Image (tube, rainbow over all chains, first blue to last red; front, side, top):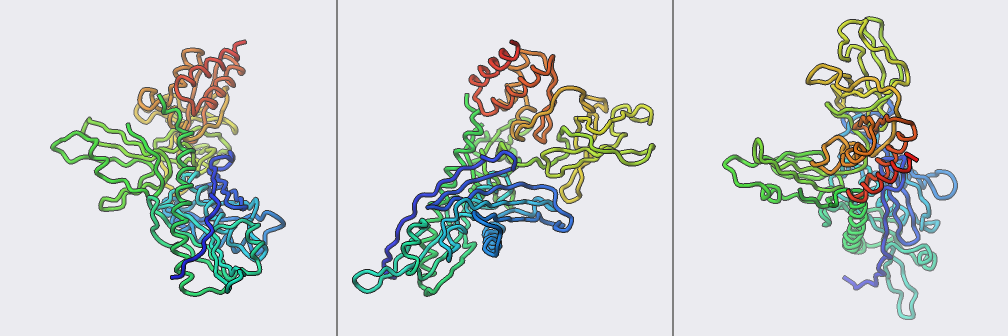
Length: 242
Length: 257
C-alpha cells in the first residue's frame, strides 16, 4: 500500500438538547459544515404511512438556500440508509419517528454532497440519541476526498478528511473521488459498515484504504459524540449531587 | 446506587451487576428497567443514552434492578401510570358514554375515559359530568402500542375509591420533562427527586398532581403563589439539593411580597 498524505480533520463539535419544542435535537459542526437535526417521536402516525409491526421513520432535509430539490431527496435517502438499521423500530409499532435535518451551512462545493451528508448522518444520530429513541448501537460518518496534487514531481494522490469549503474550492479541479462512509460502532469500536457512497473515479485499493482511514476517523468522531452526550446527561442529572 | 453514562450498544457485563449482590444460596435476580433490552441468552443491550443506574435490594430476595435513566424524550403510555389530560370531547349515548381525553406530550395523544370509570359511578345519576376543557387526573388502565388509544380510569385501583383522581378544578397546568415528573412521584429519600415538593411544602400550603406525561397541576392560596410554585419546580429541576433549597426559598419569599 502506498503511503498517503492524509490531512487530519478539523475536530468536530456537537451540542444536544437545545430545542424545546421537539423531543430531541442536536447541532453538529465539522469544518465549515453546520447541521441542526431535530427528532419528534414516537408520535401519532398518519393512517396512510402506518406500519403494523414497526415505527415509520420520516426524514426531512431542509436546504440552507432555496427550496427542496433532488439533492435533499438524495441526502434523505442516504441518511435513512445509514441510521435506519440501528434504530429499534419494532419497539414502537404504529408510530412515527420524525427527523428534520436543517442544513445551516452545507460546507460542500456545488459538485459535491459528501460533507453535508456525513455531517447530516452524525447530527441525525445525535438527535435520535437525545430524543431517547431506542437504538441498538452508535453511528458515525466521515467524508474522504481524494485529489491529485500538482507538485513539481509527478502528480501525487492526496487525501483530505472532512475538509473545509475553502480547502475544497482550492482543489476543486483536481478532485478525483469523494467518499462518504458511515460505520456502526459498539462501545467505541467499529462493528460494521453502514454506508459507503462514492463519486468520481477510483481504484479498488483506494476504496479499501478509505474504509481503513474512515474507521479511525469514525472512532474519533464517536468519542466526540460520547463526550457531548456525557456532558448533556451530567448537566441534566446535577440534582443527584449531594 | 452507582451511576455512569452509557450509550446504546455499550457492553453491560453481567458480572458487574451480580458482584454488587451479597452471596446467597438462591440464584441472583436481575431486573431490567427502561432502556435495556434483553437479548437471550445473556446479553444486555442498552438502547438509550443516559445514566446507567443500579439499585440493589435484599428483600424479598437478593436482586439488582438496572435501567438507563434519562431526563428527556417523549412519554410512551404504560399501564398504571397516572397522567394529566384535558377533556376534548364526548361520544356514545346516555347509557354508555365516553370522554375523549387529550394526553399532551404522549406518543398516543388521545385516551378514552368511560363515564363509568369513576368512583361511585355504578348508577348513571351519580356519574360526573365533565365539560370540554376540564383537566382530569387519570390512570392508564389498558394500553398497547400496537393497539392504539390508551384506556383511562379515574379511581384508585386498590380501594375503588376516588383517591384524588377525577376532575381538577382551579389551579394551573405546567410542562415539565418526563424525567422530572418521574422524580416528583417518588419519596425524596429514595431518589432525591421530590425533595423540591417537601421544601415547598414547608414554606407554603399547596396541592400538586403529577402526570407521568410530563405535566403537573398546582393549586394554592393565590394565582401569584401558584405561578411561583411552578417556577420554583421548573427552575430548580437540575439543581443539587442545597442550591435548590436556596432558590425555592427566594422564589416563594419574592412571591409573598
